Amino acid sequence: MRRLLLSIVCLVATAASSFGQAPVAAKVPVVFAAYTTPLDEPWNMVIHRALTDAEKAGRITYAWQDKLATPEAMASGLQSALVRRPDVVVADGVEAIDVLRAAAAANPSIAFVVGTSSPPVPPNLSVFDSDLSQPAYLCGVVAGRLTKSGIVGVVAGRSDVQVHRAINAYIQGVRDTNPAAKVKVTFIDSWYDPPKARQVALDQAAAGADVIWAEREGAIAGAREKGVLAFGNLVDQSGDGPDTVLTGPVWSMTPLVDHVVKQSAAGMVRGESLQDFSSLARGGAVLAPWHAWAAKLPPDVLELVRAKQTAIKTGALRLDPSADRPAGD
Image 1 (cartoon, rainbow, N blue to C red):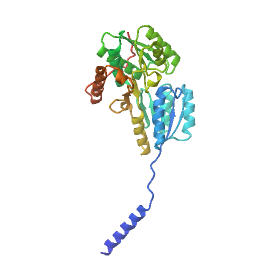
Image 2 (cartoon, rainbow, N blue to C red; image 1 turned 120 degrees about the vertical axis):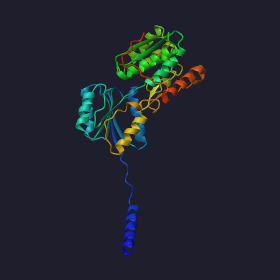
Image 3 (cartoon, rainbow, N blue to C red; image 1 turned 135 degrees about the vertical axis):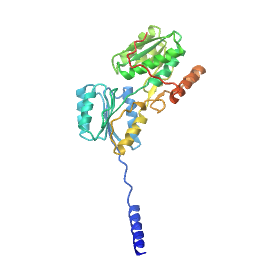
Image 4 (cartoon, rainbow, N blue to C red; image 1 turned 30 degrees about the horizontal axis):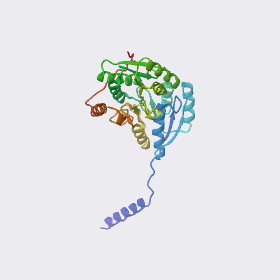
């Protein structure tokens, strides 16, 4: 009995002591983002907004640097950032993947999350990209149904695996609804050259295209000048031309950022593929809102898009677009 009473006293004392302690604060990861192009390039802005939202919610602290367009510039930007020992580095790997791999190998305790078509490198380099194939297909479905000239266009940036897949998915959508339609595809060989993209859109419209996917920033301006319909890309670009922009593939980094932040807050560092976060089912890829076009488009077109979207989300419709560079017609 004496031992039992002593045990009870010890338990009560321990509980009282624990009750008086303040809860351990959750770790707030430090995130640094390295952007190749200017921050206002849409691809960058998708990442920047997701990270800014996470910072506003108190889940991370966030710093960034843009215009790291060469391997030398990326190496310099990383060197300055790594001195501060961030927990996570989010970076564009299109121009400097070797630099990023070397930095990750030299800093195994830091999680590197790199936008690239290359595979992940354990233990700490994960990969992602803006695979917009699914919503691009839906835009192609709309383009095929709406074109009156039988010619639709794509103003694309640089030749890249994920860009190829998205454009090939768009072409598949056009073919599924209008097998006779022709698709003009033009690469401007730049990730960010709005004047050049605008001129290509003007040229495509002059050649008969009456619906243009502005895969690159600037093409909407050309479509607007010619009075033809357009799709935006990466972000909701309706504001660039409400009477021109129907919708467009929109990329969301929020699901992926949530995943990475939770891992980092728990002290986990991994090298994994995060490509599947860019899907309709996971919310990493969506169609931009229709805005006023919801009331202007034929109801059967909207219903067809909804049906196709549901089929993709449930797996009833599986897309496997080619990674080959699309030639167009």
